Amino acid sequence: MTLAMTTRSPDAATRTAPAPPRGTDPFGLGVASGDPLPDGVVLWTRLAPHPLEPWGGLDDRRYRVEWEVAEDDRFREVVRRGGAWATPEYSHSVHVDVRGLRPGREYFYRFRSGGQISRAGRTRTAPDPRRRLGSMTYAFASCQAWQDGYFTAYRHMAAEDLDLVVHLGDYLYEGGIMPSGGVRNTPVHDGLRFRCDTLDRYRLQYGLYKSDPDLQAAHAHAPWLVTWDDHEVLNNYAGQVADESVSSVADFLVWRANAYRAFWEHQPLRRAQRAVGPDMPLYRRVAYGDLVEFDVLDGRQYRSDQACGDGARTDCAARLDPARSMLGERQEKWLTDGLAGSRARWKVLANQVVMAQNDFDPDPGAQNFSMDFWDGYKASRDRLFRSIAERGVQDVVVITGDAHRAQAGDLTLDFDDPGSPTIGSEFLGTSISSGGDGSAGGLPPGRHDPVNPHVRFRDNRRGYVTCTLTPHEYRASYRLLPQVSRPGAPVATAARFVIESGRPGLHAEEAR
Ligand SMILES: [Fe+2]
Image (tube, rainbow, N blue to C red; front, side):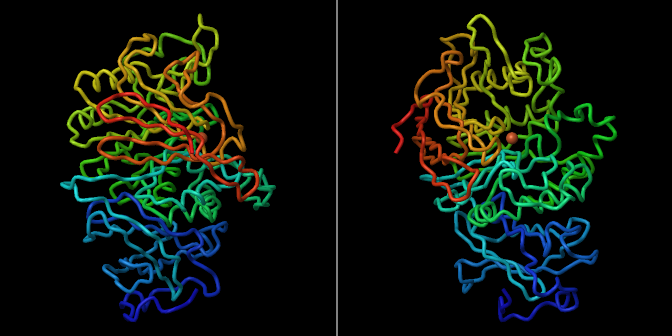
């Protein structure tokens, strides 16, 4: 669309800057906002008139992008505006750290470059930290393999009334895309066939994923709080350790640096989170008034290597080794101290892999664990749980991705002792598309899994979870879809749970 965004004349830098080619939409990857503060948000876009071409179809010049933030979706009440440079070093992405906004308010934003205007995005600042907040609603999601199915769940998410979206990782998968486009049966060009390793190859993968209209709709609908899991880099990597397909730690650190940089380029994150070489400071804390604090975890960058050979689901002594950590020493301390010192009612841990004990062996005399889950880092989990119990931290909720199934349950101090106290609850939010259609059923809401009695619900369909928090209750609704192999599937609530503040443990409610 080409029209006047504002009557204001462009600044000198904009007048002399090169423009993206006319006749193409330079905003083909959409717009996004993220990491809300009481006085601001980050606005994101990337100029890419041809997302699947090198450099998104642009040359190696820098381009001027103007942005504006308004109180209304017709942009009559513009409250902030400015300009930014989209540079080739960061694949012509822009990350605008807008400040000076009012707390707990809805805003609209858009970008302009070369006379072309982006779609408008809606965002919302975090509430005043001193305010007693009556309620907030957010949705969380993870795991969106493009070739496994449509992102229909995001279309439904974008129709909900949300303050925030939390993404728990596997935003993309590093593997090559078959030319047929997989389940989507949408042919893609040959350059996507091999798995991601170089910076430009990761950028192409983001170009493909972020071209998805349903994903764009969800980004334009609410601010996002993102973290990552393994597939933003490489399957099941742990800290500086990759699988045997990468020949050395030095090689893997180059690989990781490419992946981290591409992640930052394509997410609504502040400069403070930008990757420097193979390091990216991603774990952080975001508060919503006195109601909830989100501890956004990074369970990949600092973790010890998987015990007992990754993937081997047999028990071994290394699983219990207290020297091993899921979060690394610094993040572990940051988390336990933050939880103990928090004045927020609800403490939500935005977490990657399953935290509750998850015995895969139906034989009551045997146990069988995934070494990639928290089960593979038992001493690290015990330290966290003991700290929560000993320091009297209440109302802890863990939200989790990675497993491609919906699951809800309680977290107990000792999962092998039926009388052990509950210290929190965990909601696993299935996947957006990874794993394909899946199937209904598994464990009806409220029942106890016979092997893992703290688990109270399981379902193998795709979707997301919507949570509404008040000072008294935490409510979670599993929004699941019958299939993702064709576009346009409906969504329905498959299970609902409530946790009462001060009374640990979740309860199933009748789904509507
Ligand atoms: Fe995944």
